Length: 160
Image (tube, rainbow, N blue to C red; front, side, top):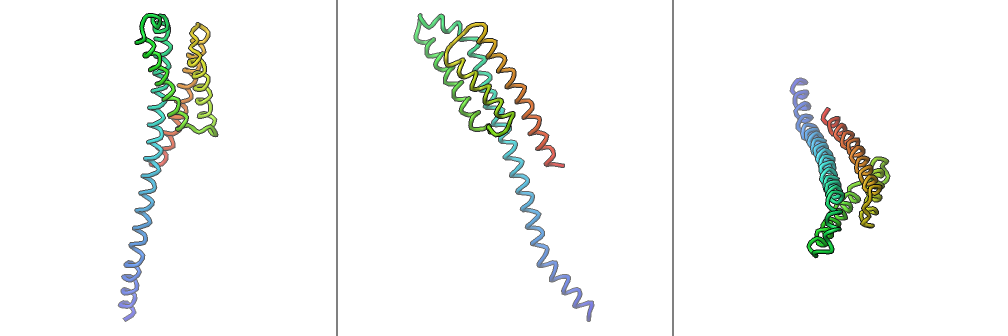
């Protein structure tokens, strides 16, 4: 008789506790997947925004002298200068939305971006400003490498 009661109690316990444990485990897995996908999405978005900014500023460095000299000839070149400025400013907005000024590396990137923006908006083009742009460009890339490495390490640790 006690074996039957004990069996009934174990069955009742399994019926009640089993679904609760399954629910908790499933909830943990969904939370884990959500956190991982959010972090991966942020890293990918930052990579795209940084690429857009760095590419458009490099295009500015390479093409602006020829466009400036040709701007007296046609309005097409003025449109091209406007397009470059629009791309740079658009990518800056994306970076500002993605980066957090309270985090040191991200603040470093934003400071370099701001300094590059001021040079580009002044439409100055001399060896000193070009070198300054290239220096900021290099600093941004090296800081982004640190951020990407750190974030990918954090994502990898989530899977351990």
